[in-house]
Image (cartoon, rainbow, N blue to C red):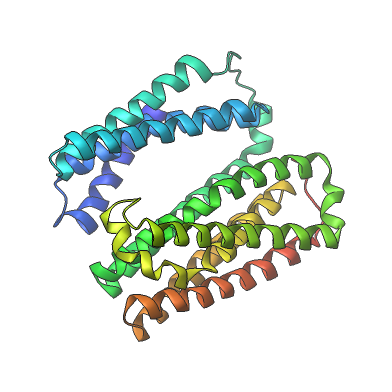
Length: 326
């Protein structure tokens, strides 16, 4: 299946390059990045997912950390030995992902033999398609908003937005680990979702930890602005204006996982599609009336708050329906 998908991936990659990156990035450089992601990192990520599915959360976490360490080491190597060009950086990135895949296959690949069970696949086909579609929608809305900001707001605003959202992504790391463990518990004990105080407490905790993480990062960058590089140092003074964004964003992601825990995979995909559309509309409306990084970041709090309200309405109305066995 992976080999059969390669022509489709190549065609899609070429189309994306021509539509978005042709003026700024050479096709060969873009191809190396695509190979790094599709042929090296995604198979390593599949090993992570399989280990999580088998309950081997520690092994999966170690592999995630290992991949991050390899990419960080490659970035440091490029910083000290590279010539500063994108054409050279992609080879460091390729090497880091190749190392991650090597470790994944050599040390973490499950020993179980794969078996084809057509009856099982037939029963799970709709859920599988819904989960896959939801994942595609999730990553699309995470990345396409940056292209939207670039198209409407210009390169300077897009750069600031992209850096801030990457910093927001850092706040999601502990939340995602917690969410993964919580979803496993809810799949075994669905009655947990019936406790209103528990749902409220979890959301309050997710929001508080997320905001505190970005606040701590903003304080650290205020003291050591060059800690994460010159590009981040330039926007360090304005990061605090987006203080509430990680709280609302991580709550939306958490609520999507609640539907997965209940087996409501089709509703989860529909909700993510609606949220992706709402996010695009809200960002386009914001960029049409706001100029400058500080107003943009300030109003982003309102945008993500509204997305949270929409997500909560969709999610908790769905949770009142009967759960579906996974």
